[in-house]
Amino acid sequence: MAAYRAGCDLVAIVAPRRAADTASRHRPDLIAFPLDGSKLERRHLRQIKAYAGEFNPTAAVIGCGLWREDETRRAVIELIKSVDVPMVVDADGIRSLYGHENVLLGKKTVLTPHANEFQQLTGVMVGNGVKERVEAVRKHAALLQATIVLKGHVDVVSDGQRVALNNTGSVFMTKGGFGDTLSGICGALLARGAEPFEAACAAAWINGTAGAMASKKSGEGVLAGDALGFIPAAIRKAQGKARASR
Image (tube, one colour):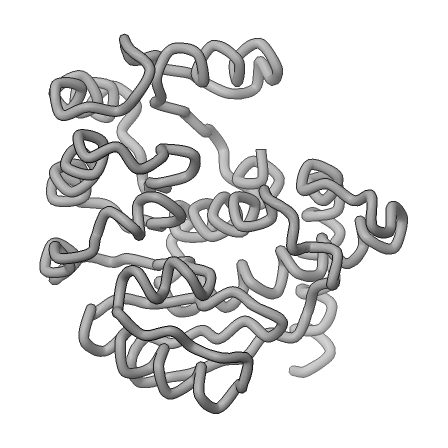
């Protein structure tokens, strides 16, 4: 839904049947392709490729809610190898990349880890200092040839050369789900033709701004789903800032 709110024309979910059916019942806007079984497995790859051939996506988001079964990790690696469109890799997708980072080479990829996922991917545990985070993110973005958004009190975005810091957001956005909205927004921007670094920067700003708007209304009771309705307002705010700076 975050991808839709960020301007994506069509969004399809490919997931184990329970998740796909739940999504389609909750929001008929979503196109759901169910997979047999309770987890992603390598046996599903042919089916996923067939769905992708029917749907013809212009971007992909991989990793949200997949969990950490060994078979699922292996399936994620094979899936990333086969993807030839810009992609966002988040959550358990990032954890699956450890030891297989070379699958990212030559692809247009945005990685969206929090500190623990960043550690599992790179072996580096970053502290809260912005300078330390900038150095770590820039170094590993260059090594991985990917754009990284290290989520935190200040989001650090780098493609290995350029670095951007995002200060939008709220202390109440530490709840589960706000990383998923970030991934959805970024995936939508990639689908609309934005380059990975620009998509990552814009998505971090939009997600933080929408989350702050929702937090202003709901305080510590805010949920990631509450931010969905504020994404268009955040985009309008960004467009207004862009016009004002010209």
